[in-house]
Length: 403
Image (cartoon, rainbow, N blue to C red):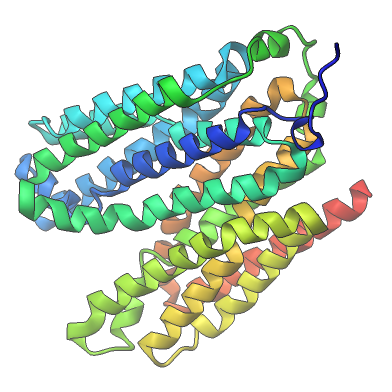
């Protein structure tokens, strides 16, 4: 007797709702572990033997960026292996590897060991990007935007909560024990992934048996547009980070600088957390390209008044609304890629998307710091605004050409 498959799951996994819950929890946990070191990283670098303000600052930057550097290099590889051998297997590998690496970071005895272990964490990690791939490929296409929006909210919530925990735990239990606690939390995500996550039997074998996809079919116009858009999104998010404290110092009294700067940084993340799932659901209804173009234009417009604010609270409010606008981009980018490549290479292409975003995450602070240092604060906002306008025009042109 033929089994009637509900329309909602006809092109997705029957386990997609359970998998979404596990992926959100695991991504939230692992992202917290990766970002909680931000408030105390310079202190840990100093404990490990770096002396002098310049050396501590340089080693802190190298140690922080090491994870994203190695993760950007390996994301397409893990995506390809997930296509071939199973995406659940790659997430088990990532969660166990990150649990071990994070625990070892708490046992480092030199700055070189810290940097090497941060590189190892990026090399072995990739749980959040693996979760995005699994959710994107196993969720029914009609629900993809909403599900990826929920995933994005979980990831951004981890980015939001991580530094808060990093500022609270070390005074209570010490820096080394904080890393060990983070490793233990990731190990819980490893257990949840191992025993609760379900992948359709034979899915990996079915994908690997499909004929190879030519390069021009893999890197088609929609995919290339999404790779560029992902990099632009992270550049827009991160370009202001190096100069925001200095910018706030021009707007408020000295004793309120760190508070207002922290609020401004958190406001954008909070806005994205609140809007991601809603914009993902909207994109499922009106089209992912439409939401991408509208979000880019809205964020670009909101950057203009940020360059001319006169009060700290104005910057915080504008950063919050910019976060609302940008929250819909990540789920829509993944959805467009999912809809424009065969399932046999979906993991690999979403891995390339992750790499492009890491490039933006590295390039954004570098460009923002360089422009802010040589041209002033306002050109950082206005230059980022111009990049987003160009990105919106480019997406509009690609969509029109495809149609």
